[in-house]
Length: 163
Ligand SMILES: NC(=O)c1ccc[n+]([C@@H]2O[C@H](COP(=O)([O-])OP(=O)(O)OC[C@H]3O[C@@H](n4cnc5c(N)ncnc54)[C@H](O)[C@@H]3O)[C@@H](O)[C@H]2O)c1
Image (tube, rainbow, N blue to C red):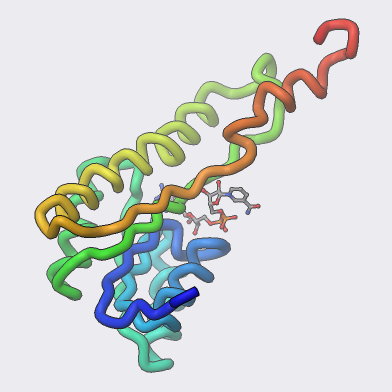
């Protein structure tokens, strides 16, 4: 597998920790210029400083992906710094408490949908505007097995006679 991203520009949301952080580092190791995007500014500043000290091209951009007003500015900051956008990994996401729907809190549900669905849609929308203009680019959206198995979780926690 060719993992060279020389002269490419990548944007990773949720880059402050976990999967997003290791992906941002992998892009940088592969030669890409990387925008590390997260709502947690301290986390991305620290990670970006570490990458820049190691000789990589990295930029920290604070953005709440659930807020559509913040997303175009985040994409624009990436492009004004690095000149283009070749890859976007839309990875920022949250978990809601693992409870049955019957016991769930509506505010937790709204938060999850606003980040995991609307946030991804916001990032796709503004990433695609740039990629359409360039006539190139790749987007990968991070999901979860949980997106496919909620009804299984619900069923598995019910009494066998009810499923
Ligand atoms: N870890 C797993 O086992 C697992 C499994 C399946 C799917 N996922 C998915 O992978 C993605 C990353 O998971 P992770 O385990 O690395 O999580 P994580 O909690 O370590 O990292 C998520 C990052 O997203 C950021 N974030 C949260 N809300 C944000 C917002 N509104 N705007 C911008 N940034 C925001 C957080 O600050 C955090 O840095 C998530 O979408 C998660 O649902 C994770």
